[in-house]
Amino acid sequence: MRQWCAALAAATLSGCVTSETVRFDAKTNQQAMVRDGQPALVSRQRNSIVIIRPAAREMRPGARPVFVVGMYNLTKAPLDFRVSDVTVTQTVGGQAAKLEVITYETLVSEEKTRQVFQAVAVGLAAGANAAAASNAGRYSSSSTVYGPRGTYNVHTTGYDPTAAAIAQSNASAQNEAMISATIERGQANLGMLERTVIKDNTLLPGEWYGGQLHIQPLVSDSAPKTYQIALRVGADQHVISITQASVQ
Image: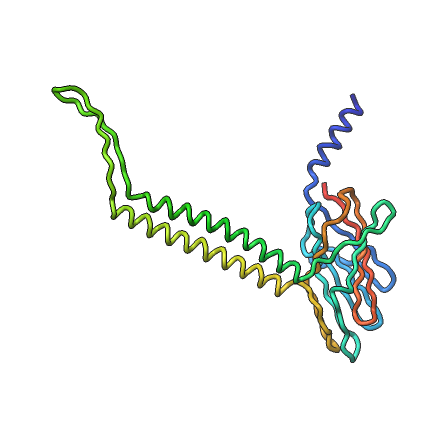
């Protein structure tokens, strides 16, 4: 009975896991810290400094990990950063599994695909709205008439052009607002990706550069999960070790 209760409690707790947090494991020339209540890490090499923290305070299990990365050029010469040089490896069962870095171009393509499906859904909704409005002026009624020669059932139909015009005008305004809102959201999402996602960049002397680094979902849902992000800035290689564990 005691073992059954323990198993039930464990199952209940596991079902309550809704988020995960990360911890940075500092190595030589690195310092783990807390910035504004979030874990962060500073990695210093000969020519550059890299600062990294999670983009959100908590991560959803099975979702893409997203980090904010900042880098600084310590030299008097330009340093190149290439997203294609970033590698992420997760340790699963003692083996290293490579994780894909989701590039800006891929994120834009995904957003445009999402917008296509959203446009189709909005088009269907607008069509249904317009069809309903076109029938709004039609009316019908049934009544029973009692007379000296008996009882009759009377069915009356008609069309009210004023009611139809009002309904169609309202539907047109609603459809226009719905379509405009969809377009604005899509443009805002693309603009957000443009402003926030990290891209290839040449850092000039004394320049900071950074953005969001998106990674494919981790291979295993078991906790804790460990993985490494390796970023190259010029000739410097910054290797960042991360542990991601569940929050009960």
